[in-house]
Image 1: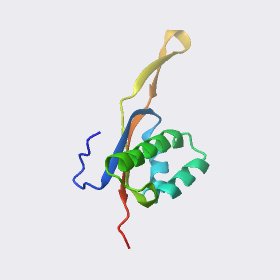
Image 2 (image 1 turned 120 degrees about the horizontal axis):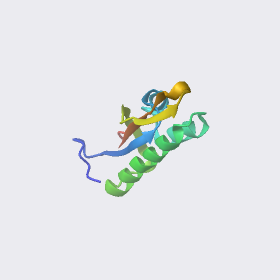
Image 3 (image 1 turned 60 degrees about the vertical axis):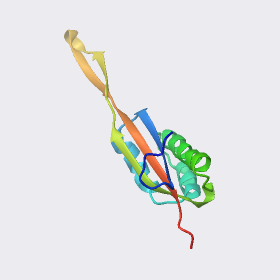
Image 4 (image 1 turned 120 degrees about the vertical axis):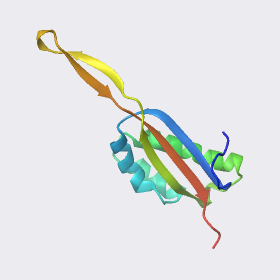
Length: 121
């Protein structure tokens, strides 16, 4: 992965085409934005939402990128950016009465997480 961010000490990871609505993913991302990596993992482990699985996967990938590509310590990382954008909807049809078809839109989203080292105090 190339680090395309302007700040060289920021590592990113993206999860694309994740099944789930954007609003349900955003409510979890709003809780972990600005927290340390360790605190975010603990929060995600105990949240009762289905979207915490893919978010945890993307977060671990961002931290692995920071550790491997930038040589940063995972204990010093903070989540700087956590966003979810809408992906394409899968269109499915359910048969209904009298030969009609009922459209079902299965939503997808793209999750982006960036982590950076905390400034030395």
